[in-house]
Image (cartoon, rainbow, N blue to C red; front, side):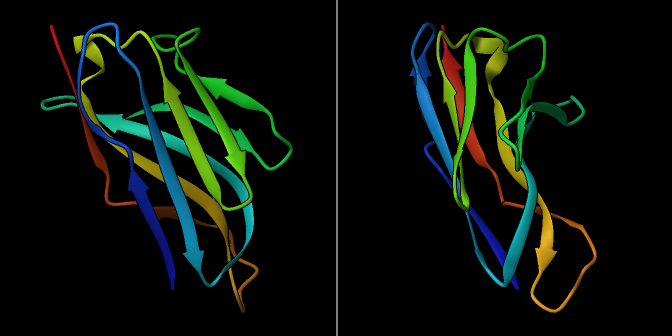
Length: 119
Protein backbone atom coordinates (compact mmCIF):
# COMPACT_ATOMS: atom_id res chain seq x y z
CA UNK A 1 0.00 0.00 0.00
CA UNK A 2 0.98 3.60 -0.57
CA UNK A 3 0.69 6.10 2.25
CA UNK A 4 0.83 9.87 2.05
CA UNK A 5 1.26 11.82 5.26
CA UNK A 6 0.96 15.59 5.30
CA UNK A 7 2.17 17.92 8.00
CA UNK A 8 2.74 21.59 8.61
CA UNK A 9 -0.74 23.01 8.62
CA UNK A 10 -2.04 25.30 11.30
CA UNK A 11 -3.29 28.76 12.16
CA UNK A 12 -1.41 31.79 10.94
CA UNK A 13 -2.10 35.49 10.69
CA UNK A 14 -2.54 37.18 7.35
CA UNK A 15 0.83 37.95 5.83
CA UNK A 16 2.45 35.00 7.54
CA UNK A 17 4.02 31.84 6.17
CA UNK A 18 3.63 28.10 6.49
CA UNK A 19 5.46 25.16 5.00
CA UNK A 20 3.58 21.98 4.24
CA UNK A 21 5.24 18.61 3.78
CA UNK A 22 3.95 15.38 2.32
CA UNK A 23 5.87 12.12 2.50
CA UNK A 24 4.99 9.21 0.23
CA UNK A 25 5.88 5.81 1.63
CA UNK A 26 4.99 2.17 1.31
CA UNK A 27 4.97 0.31 -1.96
CA UNK A 28 5.30 3.26 -4.30
CA UNK A 29 8.27 2.80 -6.60
CA UNK A 30 7.78 5.30 -9.42
CA UNK A 31 6.53 8.85 -9.05
CA UNK A 32 5.34 10.77 -12.10
CA UNK A 33 4.30 13.95 -10.32
CA UNK A 34 3.50 15.32 -6.88
CA UNK A 35 1.14 18.14 -6.13
CA UNK A 36 -1.00 20.04 -3.68
CA UNK A 37 -4.73 20.65 -3.86
CA UNK A 38 -6.97 22.58 -1.53
CA UNK A 39 -10.64 22.70 -0.72
CA UNK A 40 -12.38 25.43 1.23
CA UNK A 41 -15.88 24.96 2.68
CA UNK A 42 -18.48 25.28 -0.04
CA UNK A 43 -15.86 25.26 -2.79
CA UNK A 44 -14.64 22.64 -5.17
CA UNK A 45 -11.20 21.16 -4.79
CA UNK A 46 -8.63 23.10 -6.76
CA UNK A 47 -5.07 22.53 -7.81
CA UNK A 48 -2.61 24.72 -5.94
CA UNK A 49 0.55 23.55 -7.66
CA UNK A 50 2.42 20.51 -8.81
CA UNK A 51 5.88 19.34 -9.76
CA UNK A 52 6.80 16.72 -12.31
CA UNK A 53 9.51 14.12 -12.05
CA UNK A 54 11.61 16.40 -14.24
CA UNK A 55 11.20 19.30 -11.86
CA UNK A 56 8.75 21.40 -13.86
CA UNK A 57 6.27 23.26 -11.69
CA UNK A 58 2.89 24.84 -12.28
CA UNK A 59 0.72 26.95 -10.02
CA UNK A 60 -2.79 28.28 -9.74
CA UNK A 61 -2.92 31.95 -10.69
CA UNK A 62 -4.13 32.84 -7.20
CA UNK A 63 -0.90 31.62 -5.58
CA UNK A 64 1.73 32.53 -8.18
CA UNK A 65 4.52 34.55 -6.63
CA UNK A 66 3.49 33.57 -3.10
CA UNK A 67 3.70 29.78 -3.02
CA UNK A 68 6.56 27.53 -4.06
CA UNK A 69 6.49 23.79 -4.50
CA UNK A 70 9.59 21.64 -4.27
CA UNK A 71 10.46 17.99 -4.00
CA UNK A 72 13.13 15.85 -2.38
CA UNK A 73 12.84 12.19 -3.36
CA UNK A 74 9.48 11.03 -2.01
CA UNK A 75 8.68 14.24 -0.16
CA UNK A 76 6.90 17.25 -1.62
CA UNK A 77 6.87 20.64 0.05
CA UNK A 78 4.66 23.66 -0.30
CA UNK A 79 6.14 26.91 0.96
CA UNK A 80 3.34 29.40 1.42
CA UNK A 81 4.20 33.06 1.94
CA UNK A 82 2.12 36.18 2.32
CA UNK A 83 -0.92 34.13 3.23
CA UNK A 84 -4.35 35.72 3.19
CA UNK A 85 -7.72 34.54 4.56
CA UNK A 86 -8.74 33.32 1.09
CA UNK A 87 -6.03 30.67 1.40
CA UNK A 88 -7.90 29.03 4.27
CA UNK A 89 -8.66 25.46 3.25
CA UNK A 90 -7.80 21.82 3.75
CA UNK A 91 -4.65 21.13 1.76
CA UNK A 92 -4.11 17.64 0.36
CA UNK A 93 -1.18 16.23 -1.50
CA UNK A 94 -1.56 14.00 -4.51
CA UNK A 95 1.02 11.70 -5.97
CA UNK A 96 0.73 10.19 -9.43
CA UNK A 97 2.80 7.07 -9.51
CA UNK A 98 3.11 3.32 -9.66
CA UNK A 99 3.01 0.80 -6.87
CA UNK A 100 5.32 -2.18 -6.67
CA UNK A 101 4.13 -4.92 -9.00
CA UNK A 102 2.09 -2.63 -11.20
CA UNK A 103 2.81 -0.57 -14.31
CA UNK A 104 -0.45 1.30 -13.99
CA UNK A 105 -0.28 4.96 -13.07
CA UNK A 106 -2.56 5.83 -10.20
CA UNK A 107 -3.50 8.85 -8.11
CA UNK A 108 -2.73 8.61 -4.42
CA UNK A 109 -4.14 11.13 -1.96
CA UNK A 110 -3.23 12.20 1.51
CA UNK A 111 -5.74 12.87 4.29
CA UNK A 112 -5.23 16.59 4.22
CA UNK A 113 -4.03 19.24 6.64
CA UNK A 114 -5.96 22.32 7.70
CA UNK A 115 -4.58 25.75 6.97
CA UNK A 116 -6.39 28.67 8.57
CA UNK A 117 -5.40 32.26 7.93
CA UNK A 118 -6.82 34.86 10.28
CA UNK A 119 -7.20 38.57 9.63
